[in-house]
Image 1: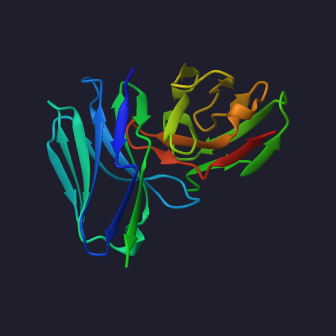
Image 2: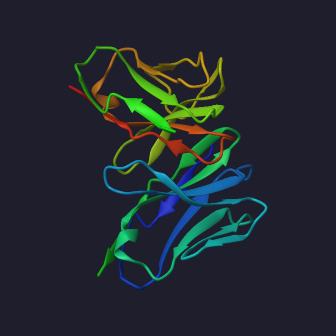
Length: 110
Length: 111
């Protein structure tokens, strides 16, 4: 089955800096790659996603890139703010099964 | 719309007890799923359903049963609770199987 690895497990950045989180997946048939943000004690919420026929997608300060050949995708957050502090999860969809990475704790220091 | 609702919010069980976690959605989504979240392990798929009457296993199905008799409801049954099932459980629904709309979660402790 699909396996998703996510790095780093924790990331601390200064307010205003950029943050990058990387994920690799194992199954080349996976075709949908979402990113979720989870604040402490809350439910995960979708922040951006990308399909396998697209290489990059942007939404304001957030972007996702996908390299199908290398089977990895990344989340880029620019101009980080304290409210970006949360746990971020990547995932890969193969058929009807969504497999998540282990998560990255992002801390934005002001 | 209430979205996805889950009950109870918290539950403590003794080893060997059984219980049902309730999940309901009012968005008319065909897809529903159950995940468990453990520290350092992300969210792992337990069972999912692509429509009423259809269910299938996810990554970690052992010890759990599901049924889907209506589009709205997708209960998760723990047959004989074990300490290894201590976790936070999230139900989710989706119109297409892609974007997941999560419920607020149920924190379960098995002693």
